[in-house]
Length: 131
Image (cartoon, rainbow, N blue to C red; front, side, top):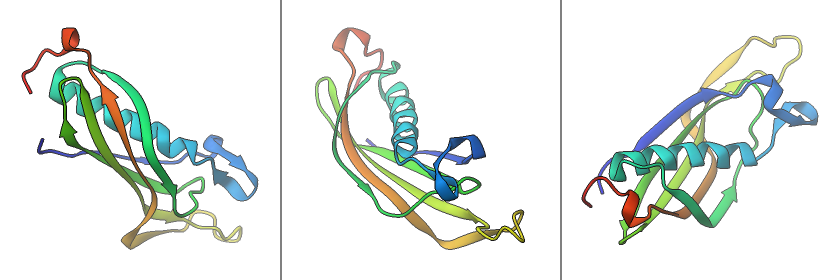
């Protein structure tokens, strides 16, 4: 299947769960779930279900104020299963300097913070588009 879904958002302060405004890695998995849902709607006309992650790699920290771009694509389509790959990159890094808290930097190139792959399922009865 061709096509990629991209979500970009700013991580808010209330999402920081650890000291130093560090964000839980599970937040990236939540973004991947949203990406997967959109991919399934585009392919099948249904939200489907996330069955399992095959791999998850947390590669760099995410902090409150960072801008994250989550990308996903379907890499294999079975009768009901859809294998997907995901990448989350930090595209803007918030200042970590208490003396200059509103400063932020565009990252060029963006920093990969998480990679994952997994499988989603759309039951045949719910598939409204032909694969």
